[in-house]
Image 1 (cartoon, helix red, strand yellow):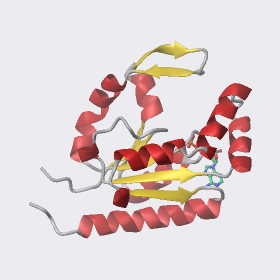
Image 2 (tube, protein in one colour; image 1 turned 90 degrees about the vertical axis):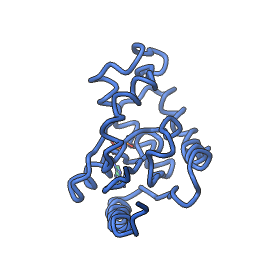
Image 3 (cartoon, rainbow, N blue to C red; image 1 turned 60 degrees about the vertical axis):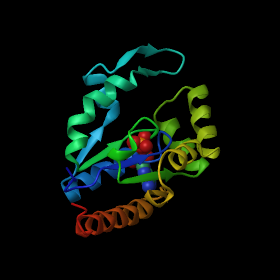
Image 4 (cartoon, helix red, strand yellow; image 1 turned 180 degrees about the horizontal axis):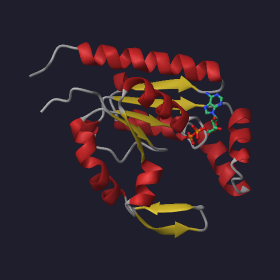
Length: 175
Ligand code: ADP
């Protein structure tokens, strides 16, 4: 069955602005914000807490099972710091948010990230780890890289994604 609303991944290194973007988008469009960090905790989609990484060790199969019903109905905005675990058929658009080192450093520092975790995330942003993953996993025409340094960026990104959603809804139906 074809979806009436698209599924969108908003991804990127921690601190780039995924949750901020998803929150506004969900409010403006009525699409559903799937905050996967919360789902991992609420539905116990993990194998415990890693002291080393200061995060849950995610059980990806459990996480996919926990989100499957909702995603298959369409209209989900998936908020996650990676994108290689989702089946390609679920996804209509992949937004990779990017932030300059200085801003990202300040945002992660404000979250009191331990130094090693902070540095690891800064390195990952500089090395474009999530962008590379997105380009490897999805067709290039559905992967969009957007800057998220300022609130003006946020506003223009939201506008752009909203107009993409409207276009998607008006596309000729395939069935
Ligand atoms: P993520 O979900 O990617 O970890 P958040 O949305 O939680 O990131 O944002 C981290 C912090 O950065 C928050 O304090 C948020 O207000 C701020 N922030 C996010 N995006 C922007 C932006 N484009 N411009 C300015 N501040 C931003």
